[in-house]
Image 1 (cartoon, helix red, strand yellow):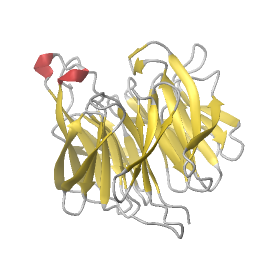
Image 2: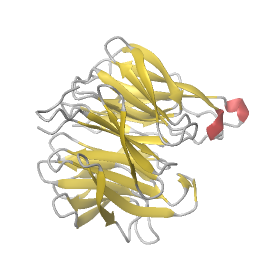
Image 3: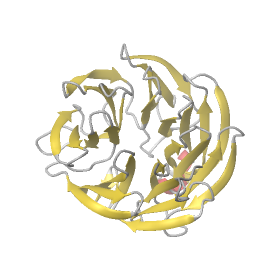
Length: 346
């Protein structure tokens, strides 16, 4: 944890869907600092270090993917230092924003959106300076969710819950560039060197055990081929790569005999693979239904948002043990989702 000359700490920002809020914690002491109210059903967060802003996607009016009462269309913009809402971006005619990725070099914010009555799912491009719409790239699937870009900003990848492929986007030409065959997919991330794309598949529908072996599909970013599969003991939603290249995955533990409903989860597991997607280097118990993962800038601390528990498990990635557990939103309620690590200014 760092502080600047004004002794401001690094901060962890956490979404609560049920809040609906973004809660700020001191990343060194884990003291709760502030709570900011946002529009209903916030899902993901993205920190913009150049503008000291947080972008928060509100995906549904009420509910979650496949079980909601309407799609939202807002991106809430939060001043990360003042911890207050400074703008709201309306993505209409698009809706159900979820995945967020930022190209700092070209000042572009990418937002994945679900299909409309006239357009397939896609990725909306916003100018990060003006927050105005630049364009939209189709992903050729109805339900894109997580989205990630290469370190050089030239390629993008979208996971698609229902479609049996990951969409590849050419971000220089702003066009659809192809498909990589995988079962319906959940989270993804790109290695720091841009060589690999790690994709969680198959997706979970909670009605029955997955038909395919759950794990992480390792895609060679240059060839677009699945190079290998990192097997896991349970269905995976979140995938995150640290600054050191370690691959962090959140495995669900589901009592399929109970119908696989949201309430049937037991405590999940954080599984850590060596850089490059090698052997398992550690496993740590976390809360129920790990949904989002991030890490500190030096890659020594991991943060796992557990949506059913309504908690964030803070993990020492060197010792592979739990440092503390943070309560998010109203105590005892589900909802912990998006995460962003905010280094102190300066």
